[in-house]
Length: 260
Image 1 (cartoon, one colour):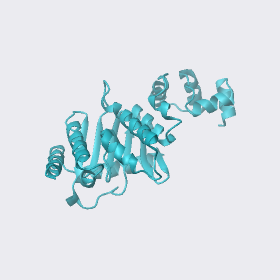
Image 2 (cartoon, one colour):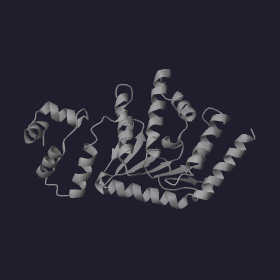
Image 3 (tube, rainbow, N blue to C red):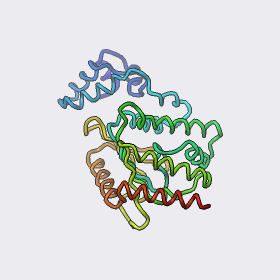
Image 4 (tube, helix red, strand yellow):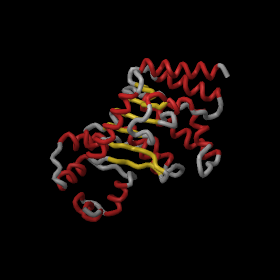
């Protein structure tokens, strides 16, 4: 269906449809139902989930960054905001949702091409605001699989590294946060070269996988792709340490840093 055809169906024009598609305008429940009928979608749970998402009339906080950050980062923040659960896997970096301000700042200072100091701060503040999903009244359940390499990576020197490790250790004590460490001795494992975010949607059809590439952020939602990434994450969890042993390893690394 073209934007012109959609406009006729909803009793509006092509410009309005384009603004809805670009997230500049919201869409009403009645219009969503009209589109669902046109596409012969009879899945009430899916339609209800979409209506609930559209009912949030206020602009998402990420919109304030539309003129300063890449659209993929805005999509990531919105994806995390609407997810009912999050699963992530990281090999070379700490999970963004568990990074300290100092750690995040050092990462963005190493960006290629280089970021200006104001742009570094825009990226840092965006990353910190994403973390609100872990602190809201009904925090999002979060599982972070982290390789030992990421824990030992240095950004900003020993003090910044200690602060980051102490933070992830403290966050792992929250009931809704699970941190699982893959130790060096685990050897090879699926997905070993890629950071993965699996956002669980209100209904299975809204599940989405996000990962970074050299050219930006990529989103996947095809059922076969989602199943493949669920298998990868499940297998990564099987080679990871338990939550308790993961915390023990983090504490060991902190003690090593304190000795420097």
